[in-house]
Length: 179
Image 1 (spheres, rainbow, N blue to C red):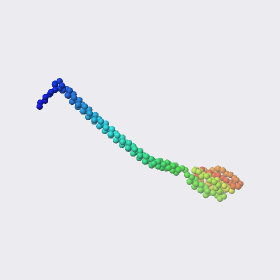
Image 2: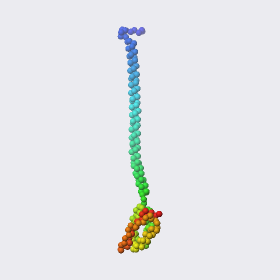
Image 3: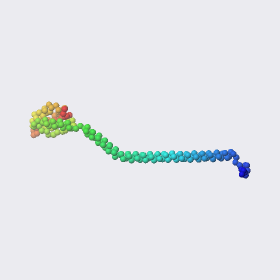
Image 4: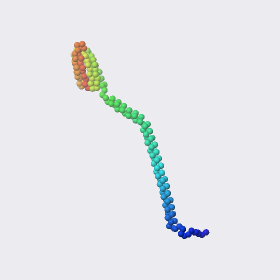
């Protein structure tokens, strides 16, 4: 059948309106496609960053739990470090060992009749209080100490006489290490 057009010619579509309509239809289609692509892209970025954020949060929580697990170890290390500092301080402190050796040599050089009443032992020095019935005994004791040349300084702090006890002398040995 041949194309019979029963519509009057005035109502017939003009060429330019059909062209505008098809162009508008294509533009709307392109617009919808671009909007859909943008929605998918934005959704993809949101999903990607959401997953990254979740990974970062999980990683942070994991690190925090590891740090909390290591806190007792850190406390023990700090305690151990403090103990080491204190022990090195104690080991570096001067001792009275040299003075006790010197003290022993002084006691061994006591002449007969001289007795030790009291002693005082400190780092860098010690002192001895001795008594004797005769002053010559104390003099002999001091004489033997001075000729021993074992002490840097010997000082007679006091010398007293008491008729009941006899002569009493306090002798200090300063820097009393044996040379």
